[in-house]
Length: 67
Image 1 (cartoon, rainbow, N blue to C red):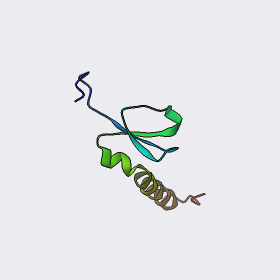
Image 2: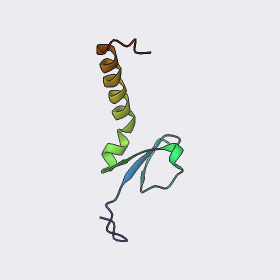
Image 3: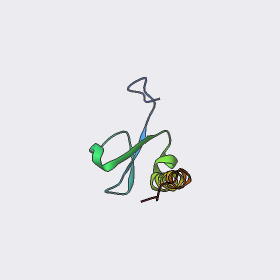
Image 4: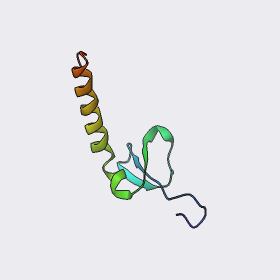
């Protein structure tokens, strides 16, 4: 929890700077998240890549072309 509030601390990955931010410090269009930990935020691009691959596989199983 953040000492200033009752809200838990959230972490974001900034796609422009490639840095993890504690709390939202940049415009939304540059952020991925929120994540519960700094480590999760640092892995945001890998998480997104794996999710996209999984969704593409699901599409292929449903008969889509994947593109």
